[in-house]
Image (cartoon, rainbow, N blue to C red; front, side, top):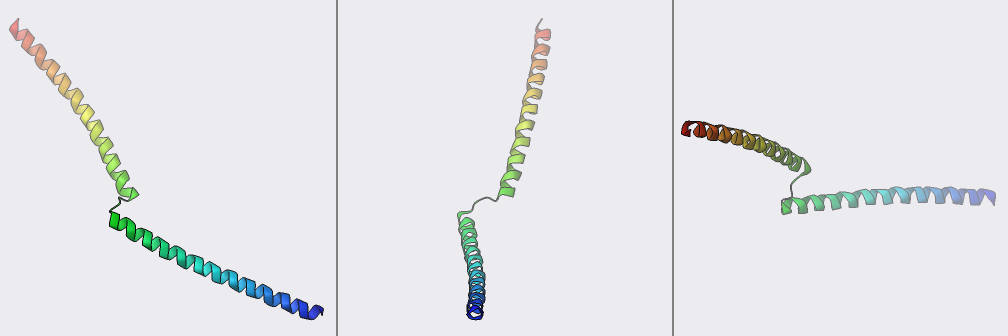
Length: 90
């Protein structure tokens, strides 16, 4: 009887291993299909990719910094021009 039950459990173990492998294959296949569908939907929605967003964000930050420098420079030039006018008027 030990021989028969040992073989039974060996066969059951092989069956469960095969079933687990098949289930893993099905899981990977479903993940692939879902991923492909999600990518298709995102392309149709025209969603921006992360890399593009980060690049535009960096450009906007640089533009803000340049704008601040230009404001300071303009204020200095206006102040200098105002002082020049007040000296000529005196």
